[in-house]
Image 1 (cartoon, one colour):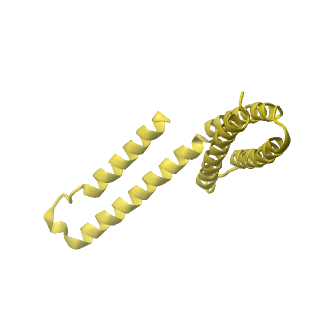
Image 2 (cartoon, rainbow, N blue to C red):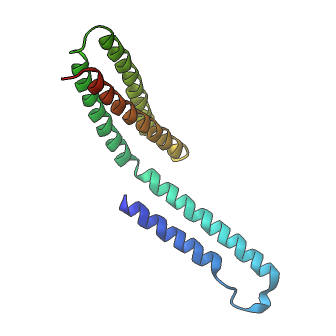
Length: 155
């Protein structure tokens, strides 16, 4: 992750230096200034492409991390299910319904990880963004379930 920031900062610095570089002589005129702007825009685009390629190169690390995270959330959900099994009546029915929603969200996150494994450089960023959104929602749901159980099933 630290390398990613260093590479980003380096590319951004490079693009800024290129864009701010003054012409070597004042006699080059307006044509030269537009050439410089075009060159700067092209080099900035190349820097952005390099950054996107670097992010895609980190795909294996992302998939491994996401897989571990899903396994951890699955264990947490099983622990919550065990707690919910100690409830009775309406509380148990509510807990089972909430756990089914958690299972569906977990399955969606797993499907997104599977899609990330097959992602190309072209769709990598969108796959990553969708997974991060699902992960945030899933974590919040697990936290809410934990709170709900602690309030509903008093020790």
